[in-house]
Length: 126
Image (tube, rainbow, N blue to C red; front, side, top):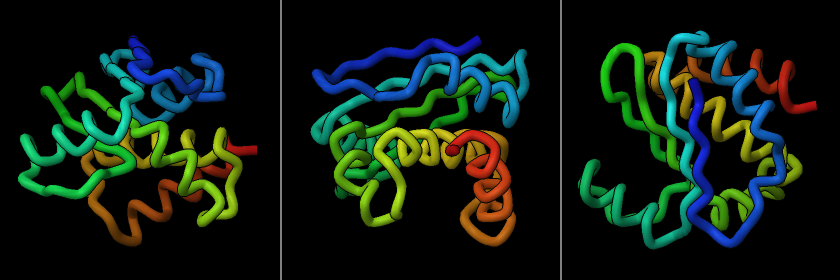
C-alpha cells in the first residue's frame, strides 16, 4: 500500500502509479509506505527534530517498523536540483524516491546504494 499526500502548491509531475511501481519493486507489495511532498520549512523542521541536522534536505525517509515507513520529498528543492544531476524534474523526483526506498530497505550511502539506484533509475526514469 502507498499513500501519497502533497502538502505543497506544486505538482510532483509523476503519476501515482509510477511511485507504486517503484515502491513495489524495491520494498514489496506488502510494505506500507507514506509518501509526502513537503516544502523547505517542513523539511528542515523534520530534519532538525529527528536527525538533529539544521539544513534543508531534499528527501527524508523514516522506517516505522520492518514493514512500514515514510518518505518525505521536498518538492521545491528537488525541482531546483534536477538540472545539477542532468535529469528532468520528473525523473529526479523518481530518483529521490528510489533513494529513499533503498534506505528503507536498509542500504546506506555507498557502492551498494549506487548499484541499486542505477538499477532502478534505468528501469523507471526513462
